[in-house]
Image 1 (cartoon, helix red, strand yellow):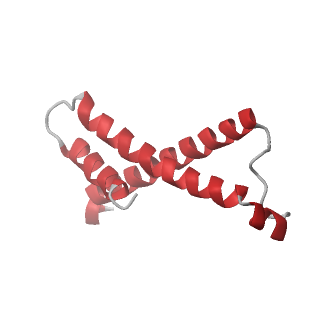
Image 2 (cartoon, rainbow, N blue to C red; image 1 turned 90 degrees about the vertical axis):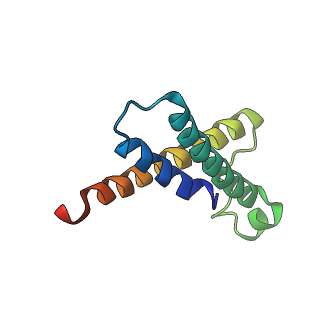
Length: 104
């Protein structure tokens, strides 16, 4: 994640400032970096929430991951997509603010 987050910002800035048409590979690079970060974030949340010790110590706080396997997959994929999309939104905002510069 330490490489993927700045990579998304740099790649989006390169796409935004490119004078010619951008191909598929730069967008694929952004997607891979975003999904890598989303996967790490979802895995950390998943592992933290499913730890039996934490669930026993604070059952009111932990336990948003359901016990059924198919529901766990849905929650995990939702967390992954949410994290990846939020990263792209934030990085796009940073790039747009950088392009506007002092004019804003």
